Length: 470
Image (cartoon, rainbow, N blue to C red):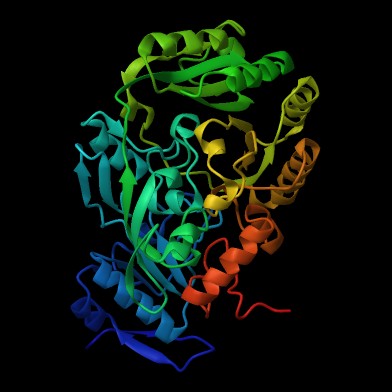
């Protein structure tokens, strides 16, 4: 008997699709709910997300992507697009809908002479960085090896090279995008420039990016690694001051958290607040050692793995994310003793097994790009903050949600703002904070041109201007 799966939507006529017919029509893999690999295929990075799509299609080409987009358009079903599966809101998978999984599309062509790369969007940051590193080259992504380059690029891309070379989108030269009508478009500064502007920070609202053309930089041996320091208010304040004063070649990520019971952490510090800092200096080695020295001098390090190493070594393999977590992100413009004391006080007050405040000092190359040049509107913000609490029992969620909400309110400075890639399912008001003022209006207009029915809605959604409510 031919296996059928019924894909329907209240807004459309019922459409019955045969799984064998789908498999015959597509070059990629079609995974149905009764297939042996279904549960693994629907699993995403954050373990607390448990959704059951009607079908998962691991596409093999842009032609496959076009067919899947057309299938979603015809059925009206929710279309989830997955690259690395790291969406905080779980948008990489849907309940009862279609998952377009890019993870089998991993072609990477590097032109070392021109310092450019064409990369399919199923690649992870770690995979891309590892191959580029064999040429002594790099494009700046985030800080986690398993993040898909599709999602992180479309949202902006803040990582280890942000002060030296800017955001990931600042090195995006072109993209191949399948739009809601199934067309495959090559977009760049000259061709479909409105769409090219929008995908540099506007997320997955405008189509499915199948390939990116990136600029590569000479990044071979860096001075970098992890530095653990005791997290007193004075050390936190001083760490941020040093990070702001450091040369642009140095980018830092400071995770303020209870020390984990790991072998390299002295036992007497387990559970005490520490700064688990990741530092990368992309420049001359001697200059890197000089830039790192002030951080080592802030307090006696509890652990120190910083030294010369190939840049790809910063992308160590990562396990799955937590099952239960609440998180909030924001931008602030300064950290002084009062802010540092607020951070310490709130972390001590958390009842979660793990509570974290992450600080990323920005500026440098990122800040020199005009805010209106891309859909990433927060070029002048100086510090990005991510707050999180990981806990064990779902019934405790409200307590930890109150904690992270209060923490964010206590740290708030200046205009509200948030990095789209660090947003959970937090509502339209928060999405508007990611795209303030005229950025939102411009994105909504472009959305209306390329996706007037809001087919691409499982994302930090910007409704098309043509259908927005008055």
